[in-house]
Amino acid sequence: DTAVSQTPKYLVTQMGNDKSIKCEQNLGHDTMYWYKQDSKKFLKIMFSYNNKELIINETVPNRFSPKSPDKAHLNLHINSLELGDSAVYFCASSQGGVGNQPQHFGDGTRLSIL
Amino acid sequence: AQSVTQPDIHITVSEGASLELRCNYSYGATPYLFWYVQSPGQGLQLLLKYFSGDTLVQGIKGFEAEFKRSQSSFNLRKPSVHWSDAAEYFCAVGSGGTASKLTFGTGTRLQVTL
Image (cartoon, rainbow over all chains, first blue to last red; front, side, top):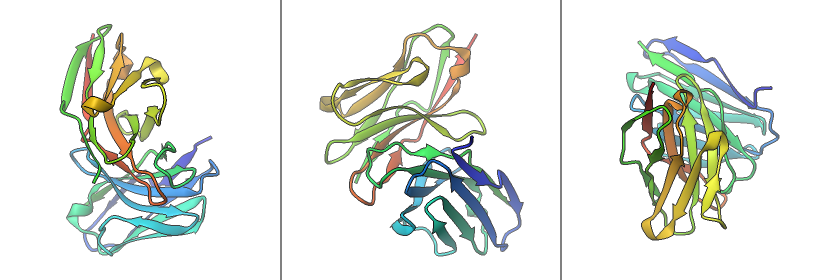
């Protein structure tokens, strides 16, 4: 069984469009995250939710809006896509919001902006 | 602020040779340290973690890492590399507290020659 699953795996779209990425975890974790991996493989946290509450927002443009309908789901909606948004977006989850709990990652969503 | 440095962008080793990937961190308190591996097109898989206690930690796939507080290092080692170990390796430091997050290094790409 997939622990952290993201859909879609690939997303190709044009500048200016709005798109969403979905993430679900079946590990029973209460904390979920979105990370962005750029073309140089650098990974940076974007958001973190604990029990459906936003606890980390790392200076991400407000075109990015995460939503957590329940503890098992964390979606990412992006408005007015720009070329610089091209990246791989990873969802992750962990139990607890403390730094000593390993995070489990999904396989990523590769977003390409034309 | 926490940070991680992986000095080696790319390393090539022969199959059967030993491996050491370097990682240096900066963190004000006791760090929570992790090594993740990313195969092409895949998400990140946790290799091992250090929270406290024994400074030599064992992980999956025959990897180990040693925490050296005096050197602010957490180097990853494997005595004999297999061709399937070719991947991108990321060192990360985790912060404590409610708003915890992982800060990643820039990664080291491992190439294995036969």
